[in-house]
Image (cartoon, rainbow, N blue to C red; front, side, top):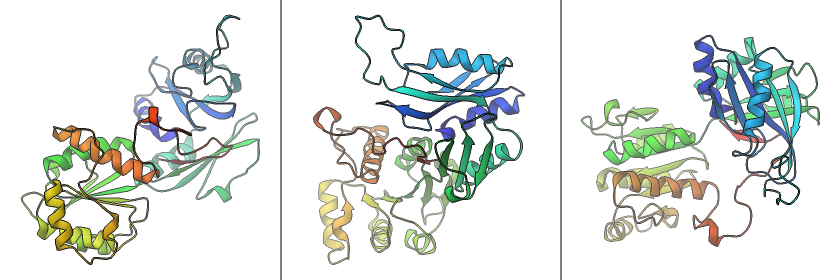
Length: 331
């Protein structure tokens, strides 16, 4: 998606490089990446992103570089495996792809995208699929032209992950969650813990009681709370407040024995059946990094309404979203 490549775009733009985007705007048949998937190719030869997971990127690099060298933007059609021999089977992602290859938008559109992503504000971004491929922005999709001749992407702020306790595990969680698009807020009432240097990857580290922070926050069903302090005086307050609200996931660190004691203390709390403890998927984690991965994997699975089992044992679509002419994408 555009948000995935925008840090590269900004870095190259700041260095005075020209950048061309290759964006997946149409598809007929199966594909490994959703509509909106984007590559960014810079004039210094660097590039990032993908539109197919590896099947067509080489050909698109060549086309993007011709645009960098002065060729006009174009809407090109490409098919994975198009160069295979007659006796070779087609790849599973053999659908025909429509890819728009054009320079990064300049002026107000560039500024609007940068500001929206930096400020974690929603933005609807449209581009015409006919020459001269004009870009436009609006606060929401309704403010942009629609139809087959336009591609619209909605950039939305990622979900909040509230981590209770500025611990080493919180630092490992933040390092994994921020690149996935989560806004990670760490809350800890202990001044010696609630320090930025303890959780450098977090978006914010706050010295406050978690229930008081939650009372002032506006969290939704997309957001999650993880209690990590192992101190009932802190974790229990966070859990009670989170369960009383609308967050989609509430989890707590601890062994099965610790969790049994927690359930006994919290008996009668409304929504207690929503509490995930011990938090995480069964990965056999034996390190901080693996424990963080286990916990975050459960947060993602619950957010996507999945059980979190092995894909080889599952049936149905791998992704939770399906391709459409105008997808809604998380920034």
